[in-house]
Structure formats: C-alpha cells, structure tokens
Image (cartoon, rainbow, N blue to C red; front, top):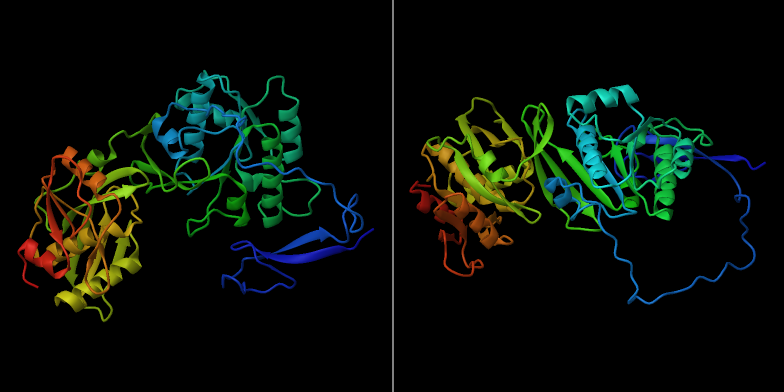
Length: 458
C-alpha cells in the first residue's frame, strides 16, 4: 500500500507547502495553513507508461450549437444579476454574512422556479427539514412542492439525485462548507473537503446538464471561506451584502461566465421575506435632508444600472494627535487620497479635523466616480454650507487634482434627470449625451474649480 503523503495548504490563497508554518509565505496571512493527507504513489488505474487516448478537436464555429432556455425565477432583480436567468448546467456560488438572508433568497427563488415547472431539490447541511418548513410557512411559500433533504454526505446526495423519479434540473447545496466525502480523512469545511466536494458535485451536475447553487460562508474580511480555487471552479460568483441594521440588501455579481459582471440587484428585507426594489435610486434618496451641510448626491453606476445615492460627510475639529477617519460604504484609502489632494492642491486644511464619511442606505460603492461627490461633501461639511439640492456629482480625481472622465456618464445623467435633478457636475470634455439635454451640465477640469462652483473660498 502506498504511503500517505502530507502537504500543507493555505486556506486563504491555496498555496501548497511541504511543512507547516504559522504564516503563509505567499499571501502573508497568519494561521491559515491546514494539513492535507493524500495517498502516495500513482492512483490505481493510472500509469506513467504508454500512450494516452487521442481526443477529438473541434472548430470554434459550429452551426449546431444547442441554445438552452434559461431558468427564469421571475424575480427580476435575481434574474438581472445572473444575466437573464440560470443557465442549465451552470454552477453558482453565493456568499454573504451570517443572517443576511442567503437562505431566504434561495428559498424564494427555488419556489419561483417550481412555478415555472423547473424541478428543484434543496439540500441543507445546517438546518433540518422542519426548520426549512417553518421559514417557508413564515414566507407563505409552504404550498410549493420543493423537494427538501437534510444531508451532508456528498455520495448519498448525488446517488439520491441520480435515482430520483424525475430529472432534477436545479440542485441547491446550503452550504458547501458542511459537505463531506467519506473517503477523505479531513473534517467538513477544510480546504480538502470543500475543494473535493465542489469538484464532485460540479462534475456530476455538468454531466447531467443540471444547474447547481452553492451557499458559501464568508470570513471576517467578507471573502468566501475555503480555498480560492472554489471561486474558479464555479461559473458565477454572487455576493449577498448589506448592513443588517438597514432593510436594503444588495446581490452583486463579481464573476459571471453567462452575463455581465458587477451587476447588482436590490432587495428590501421585510417580514414576508425579500422584496425586490424596482427603483432603488428613489428609495436611497427618500430620507435625504436637502438643507443639511455635508450631503452630496452621487450618480453611480453598478454594472449596467445607474444608481443615485447620498454621500454624507461630517468634519469636526479634533483634539487628537491623529484625527479619526471613519468610513462606511466606501474605500478608506481613497478617502485619505481625496483629503491629501484637497489640502495640497486647494489649500483646504483637514489635517486637524475628524472626518466621518457614510454612503447612506447601507450600500457599498466601489467605483472611483464617487471622488467628486466625496470632495464636494467634505468641502460642504467643513464650510457648513449646503450644496444645491438639485445637483449630482460624478468624476474621478487624480493626484494632480485633475478631474478625470468616468464611464457612461450619459446613462447616469439620464437617471438623475428622471428623478428631477437639474444640474450635473461632470469632468470637462466628457462624452455628451445624444439628443436634447434634459439636465444642465457644469464641467470641471481641476478640483480647484469645485470651490468656485460651490461659491466657497479655498
């Protein structure tokens, strides 16, 4: 019998080493090295000698390509993020913080698919079937004939799906970190188990043209737990994010082989479950105080969707040697850059002030087009002067203080005009929208011109 071989794998980056260490040499993370035991030698049935079989090559162009009908849930926000529905045979991974609503979203989606005659199976490794029924009853979904099971053994699950009287079209695994294969000497949730279970399920699903959705746990940093290779194995990676103190939830696509990436869907958490938000811009600006200093409206773009959100800033004198910088919903490093540019290029002193920045509504903005709105909010908060209530801001700020162009500014301005905004502050020389302008534009070439527009001396 071949001798078992040990290797050590980093759960953060997947790097392999031959000895254990407290710190990973590849990603510099601490306490992420786990032991993996594999049987040594060449697996039975394989040989290093002899020739392999000849595989057939095909042309890229094929007039006989099969076009599959996507499985549509009729939940428009979910279908938007997946690229128009779930592709048969696709593997989808959805991650999010505990209690954010991942299981609720999937239960609603599965029940909606059952209404469209899609045969679905829901496997839970964390809850019993009675607990799932209790949630379904609260969501008024208990009348749908979804097939449930509480299991964690992958071989049992796949054999049950294979022997089902009706072909299963969608398999939901909640969650992949609870699954295990019994011939691997590792606990569920370890790097080896997660990778092997995912590979086995995906291989089985693709051989039967069955879609599969994995629920994944996340680490304290918000990344999906387990080996990074898990995100490479699947076709689509979705993050379900939001602040549990707010009712809004954002479903964000970060990888999608069958649709656009960085697409978002907006939901509202209510007693009956998750309700899709058709016009999130109006909802995010609903409680905006127009007469408050430090408030600016950003015309953002998430995927193909324009989104108007409120940027709030509070600037207060500080007695600390190192003033505080608190940021919610935006990149704190980018805030530090904007503060440095305002001080260096505009002569606006912020080094002795505490700065608090918030993207209202619990949403997180990741694009640099928010730079101009953040700068306007900081200047407004420092001078205690309100910004024009009917003005939106969009533009990236460079280190020299120049205002750089942003993508698809015409779509952003159309969304602002639809919500009643009259003026848009944009980079100079940007692409103009075609047709009759529905919104007045004020072009800036340098950050110093922003103080002139606001009527505030630098």
